[in-house]
Image 1 (cartoon, rainbow over the protein chains, first blue to last red):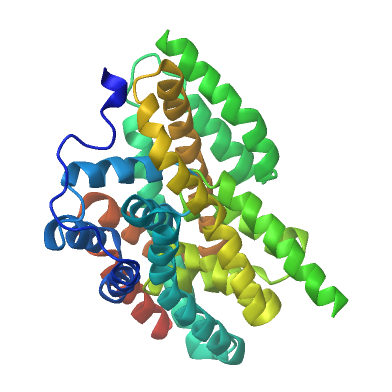
Image 2: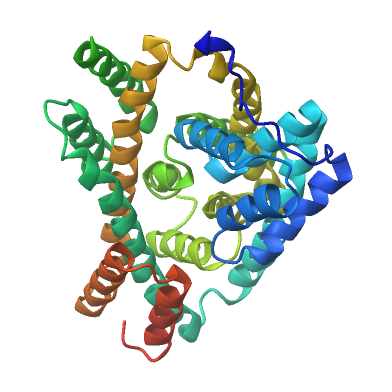
Length: 192
Length: 177
């Protein structure tokens, strides 16, 4: 009967939020979540409002990490739809995106105006170098555990993707069309 | 008018495709955005792309907002709307739909294989992004130092990355990078 367990054995305790609550909660999360919205999302949903149990939260997050697209944005849609169906998903998603979008358009307009200023050029090249460093650390944290397994095709897939996209600069669509089925087939074969 | 709607159409199609291939999140498609916007279509220079990536990392909000900046640069406010919707819409629908059905297949062998097969793909994509972005943004010795120091601190400590970005911005301000 393991297939019928659903999202979680422990139901969360609070009443189901309304659409405007969903919208405003995610809006608030983006206001507070400077430099990372995930911890705030968890705090709001699990600890403050009790809309989800910790286990439900983890399940939803695991799904969004593995699906394509911006994980945290997908998470808003998953939460919203679990609370209030399709329109709930829309409310949560919109609440999460409206402020960052407005901010980015403003910044984009400022950049179009002042992007050539010398001071801004220097500051941005400093930030770009640091951002590259952050991405290297993120990649390293993901790569290292994968290379510690025994007989496992995963390291070869990582290398193939990194070479094809990062070095050869081949189109993403074709690389994925070939390597995704190959990787799933190898994972299937190894686990049989 | 014609040319403008053509650009919006290209943005919509390309970013929707990218979002569905973005295993590992927005950072997984940085090389493809660069390939499209700089190499293929000449929408921006290498330097402008690096700037936009820097802004998207330093600004509050999710990293995916890079696509909003790119869209705005290419086609103004409507470009921003189109790229944001194309990048954040289709996969949100997919995720909301799958969250209702995926748990049912929790213990099926095919689901385990699909998940196990996709993990190294997303790790490879993020690694490729790191390679490409380093090639674009790290072009002199000082930048190598900043990138290496940031990577080391981010890897071995639990500092908030915003501090590192702030320090790097200051180093840039004083002309050190």
